[in-house]
Length: 333
Image (cartoon, rainbow, N blue to C red):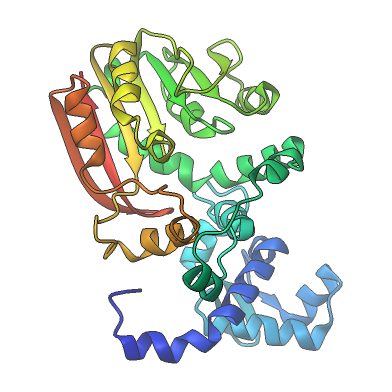
C-alpha cells in the first residue's frame, strides 16, 4: 500500500469498503469452489439458489477485480484464485482472511475519540467471559488451514537441521495445525502442542491429522509455566508480543528447553521504533497503540533478547507472509 503514491491511494479509498464486502461475501459463500471450471451465470444462480441478475453483477465485479475470468459468457477462477481461494486447496487462504477480518473489530478504534480523549478502558473480561471456545476453536482452526501450514513448512524445510529434527514444540500454538504440519512432515518426528486454550481444541486437530500417537498436548501459560525440554525445534509464531517486557526470560526458557544444536523459530512483527514501517503492521496494531497497549514487537527486540538469554547464533530476515510483512528469526543453540 505505501508503495503506491498518495494520489493512487486516495482515488481507490472510496471503494475499499465495497471491495471488502464483495470479497468477504465471496469467501463466506465459498463461491470460488463452484468456479473451478467454466460456469454460466444462470447455471451458478440455479446451483446456489441466487437471484440470476444479481449473480451476473456479482461475477462481473469479481472479474473486474481479477478474481475470475470471463469468456463467452462463462466464468472461471483465475490461476491464483484457484490456488488460494478454493476450499481444500493445500494453499487455501480464505479461512485466514475471514477469521482476521471478522476479529478486526475486537479492539475498538474510534480514531477521533481516541485522539481527543486518549486511551479508553477495554472490556477485556467481558470479551473473555462471552467467548464460545467451541465456535472460536473452529474459526481459529480455519485460519490455520492451508496456506499457513505450507508457509511454515517451507521455512522449516530450508533449515540445514531439517533432516535431524526429531522433537518439536509448538508454543502458543492455538489449534496446533502449524506445529502438526511440521511434525507430520517426517515419520520419525514427535512433539508437543502448548497453549492456554482448552485442550480438546488442540486434541481435535491432532485427531484430524492422525498424529495421536506422536503428539502430546499441554495446557498452560508459556510465560509462567514449564514448557518441557529435549526439543530439536521450537516454533514461536506470533507470540512474542505477549512477552513484551519479559522477552529475555521467555527466551532463556526456550534456550533451556532446546537440545544442543536445536533451533528456535520466531516469527514476529518487527515494527520500526518510529512506527514508520511496515505499513501493514503499523496499521494493524494501531487500535492497540491508541488504546494504550504496547503490543507489536519492534525491530531488533527479539535478537537483542535472544543474545541476552544465551543464544549466539541469530539470523533475521524480513519477508511478506500471508499475515503481512514479518521478521523471521532463526535462532540456534
